[in-house]
Length: 338
Image 1: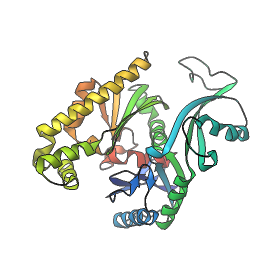
Image 2: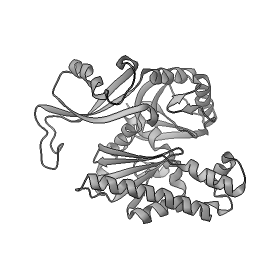
Image 3: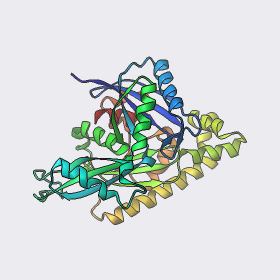
């Protein structure tokens, strides 16, 4: 019998919760994040975070015992590695050394994990029609600071929850891709998930359910808030409300339209670099996630300038057409399916 689990996605501006049983979304809820509660991947106050989750659950009538949490992207190191076949014990010993060029401090201050991308019996792992070398294995390796996990356990405990799953956003999207693999295979075997976040925009590139690259743009929906704050002479918090409610049709103001173009140009550069680095790429489809995905003129500008077919996040989520504001909850839902 499928277990019920609460997916938790902590963003810079919004907390997102999704109660999921198997592949069925039971409830979703969100709440604004207090300013500076999330700082460079670290929770500034465990007590405040725990109370925020608890009150959001209560307000939405959500009851759960176990939680799955999306690790903040700023706090996670991820790389695909190819290693010789070895035992689990040998792998656990050797894996941390793959991150020597990424981390500072002592290795014991970090926690490492992995997911198998291919194994010696996998066909097509190295390319269509090819078999993976019999003496190697391909892994997606993940590392994060031990204190991050301790933070998660503690603030979830304060909210009355037990930590069951921790994983990066990539893992959440991989779970959604696998859950919708039959449908997605009819569209393409190469695609991009575009997360239009508040502080940054991330392009996750996939071949099937294999993550092959991430491109990060240090710009996000906060840029649009700043534009509107200047235009209306208000603070950024009120400007964000204007933006998301399309107050006085502000999403079509000239200042916003120019900002959309700037974002699309940077995305085009990142996409061109990816295609240059992967000359066999036939990437033609992109799924929009994150809070910015509901801003229709932004999505239209991206689609036109990138000459790429856009899809809603609801296509990635089983039964997603029935989930209100599905694009915002994709990570919270996907993380429960790991």
